[in-house]
Image 1 (cartoon, one colour):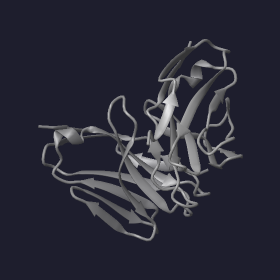
Image 2 (image 1 turned 30 degrees about the vertical axis):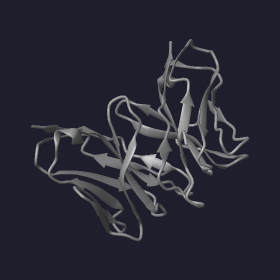
Image 3 (image 1 turned 60 degrees about the vertical axis):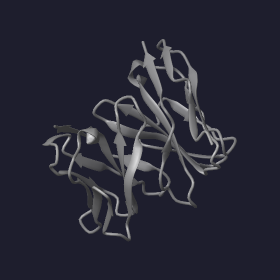
Image 4 (image 1 turned 90 degrees about the vertical axis):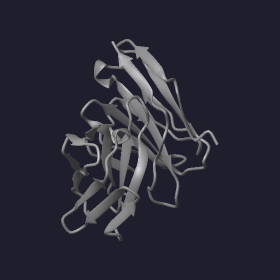
Length: 112
Length: 114
């Protein structure tokens, strides 16, 4: 079945540095790739998404890139702040395009 | 709009007991899904539905049943609870046309099976 791999599992950066999280997916039929941020005890919140007809998308300090040929996509956070500390999940739409398959998450810690 | 609601927020079951986790949405979304979240495992898809009367299995369906009699409701049933089903359960919905887009998550149900 569809599989999404996410790396690294933990990431520690200094405030102001950039953070990059990478994901690969297995099903070439996937066409929607969201990123979610989850704070402790809360539900996942969408922070940015990209569709397969777009290579890059940016929203202020957050950007996502997609390489359909290589089947990987990445989240880039610039000028990190302590409030960026959370668990980040990537996901890809399943083969039928009816639900999401998630990576295992990256715990990002931003120290001031 | 209340969005996606889930009840209960917390539940403790004994092994072998059955229960139903409730999920409702008031956004007229066609697609609804159930996920479970375990430490270090991310969110794993249990079952999903593309409309009333239509359900399908996800990555980890064993031990769970679902039905979708209305657009609004998508309950998840545990027939005989096992300790391995201790987890946080999230319901989600989406509804932009006939494809999955932004998933709106409910607040979650924390289930403990002893």
